[in-house]
Length: 461
Image (cartoon, rainbow, N blue to C red):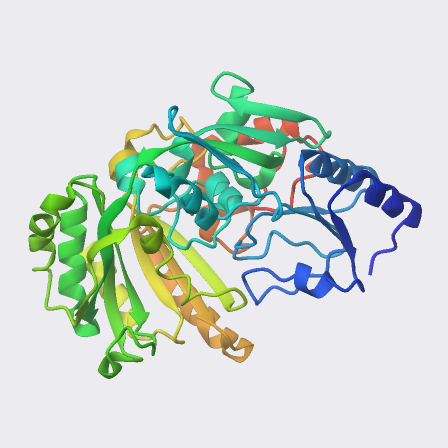
């Protein structure tokens, strides 16, 4: 345990309205838990901020006391970079303000919100922000890393709908970053992760999304080669108002699924169609000819219901290990490798997903935001997941072997939101020729690398 200056801690407590939690306090064990149960880190201090003033005080304290600093929004980060041993955690989870401007079609979202919070606020207006696939994910982490989700082909990445941010910098200043103000910082924050400061609020453009036609269609595992090829060929040229990710899962033993399918390994495509609902059945006719399904749940569904469909399967506290890649093409050879490892799913929660990122996301230039892979068509994520830590070795080995078999076919690089701590070269590969500019922006706004507990971009010397 790091030695703490009690006078300095008392000063911090007096300067914030939120809760300052130390090891040994009644709330400490609960406060240090995050989504990935594999992570076991013990911060010296956790500050549950309630406003921007609390964030400023916490940043200043960490800088002055030379403490490692981590930022926690939703706490979903796979390698647990929202926590740090013997340092200070700025916990934004109590900063939940949301304001919808229906006329301007914008929403301002504070840094502690989850996507479920945002959907709850925007859905009554028939509007949404492109986000991810699980509603308990934090807005901050997903946005700053890029934001791939069900609406990517129609409305772009989450960062493509980000209009402005308020951010507390390493020197304690609060600034706004947008196309008109601190434009270099705005560029870097759209994909550059938590490297540049603590984002206390996001201003997003809203898009018309209300009822969608979507949900999962399940196929026998042996049908996966045909299904994946038909999905691949369809999604590359499909209208941008339809999206669907393909993957491998076990069927969970829950009442919504017939008992004869429980625990089966399956191929799954989860769809989201945002076009004319009167045409949905017609649009899905060719989709339903991909193969003979064993379960078909695709139909009209409210957007927030689709967005939260997998929440119950992945509650907080499971053990998680991620690997990710981007692909320009999904060749038949790649599908052969997927079949090999998909048949070896090591635990009931483990999975592989392939997300399409063409359509609207590909119409942004690769240097227009920090996110570099605008020319890629797919993001792959391989996840070993289980409640029991005893299964970690086998699921981690499976995920690594799976990734290594497919990486030679990839576009290189990575999606930082789905990386573990994999080293500087993987981070550089994620940004390609955008990395030098990111390092220069880092040097300008955080020259001493106070914000380094992340997929770190080192300041340019």
